[in-house]
Amino acid sequence: MNIVIFGATGSVGKHLVALSLKNGNNVTVFSRNKSAFKPSDKLKFISGNVLELDDVLPAIHGQDVVFCALGDGRKGKVRAAGTRNIIEAMKISGVHRLICQTTLGCGDSRNNLSFFWRYVMFGFLLKKAFNDHELQEKHIFQSGLDWTIIRPGAFTDGPLTKDFSSNFAASKKDLKLKISRADLAWFMLTQTAKSEYIQKAVSVSY
Image (cartoon, rainbow, N blue to C red; front, top):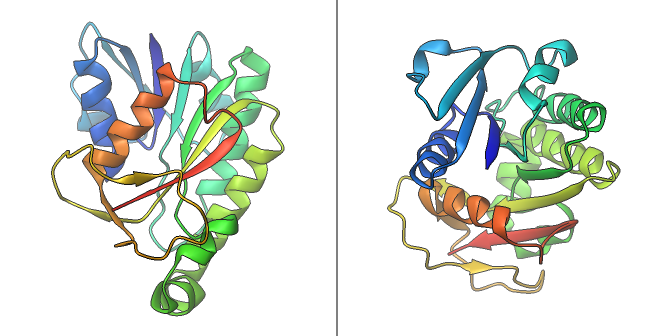
């Protein structure tokens, strides 16, 4: 399978790259940081800025699956705009499958959040980043692609456990609101072989 990963040098993206290669996929890394990976028979690097459509297009051509794990810290300037370019490049290139990581708290999953996460973190400290994720999801909803949105709880550096809740109702409250980057990447990659969450947003958390 041919896979391209946007945000590959980020904390989740690095796990996606490693797991994709371990599963025998041909992986294209799109990043401005070329030194982060060593090219191999299965790993190709394309340097570019996700905010430039002309940079994104060559990375999309010939791919079977596009992963988006874009990060931007608290600034809130890259996720939505970059995803919009990815979507446009996919349409031009005739690539349909998009798997994108946003955040727990978007859409109806806001009801899963604690008071602290709803009003302090996303209402104040991470407000710009959260709004960027919300706009990112809006672009995906309107894309017409075969998309899956993954909404994770807060990231941890824990190990791969494959033991977490997924696709839970917005009314579910007994959550830790956390998940390891390894588990998130594993769940994202499993969606390449599944169709149950196509054009759906699915939440994941311990």
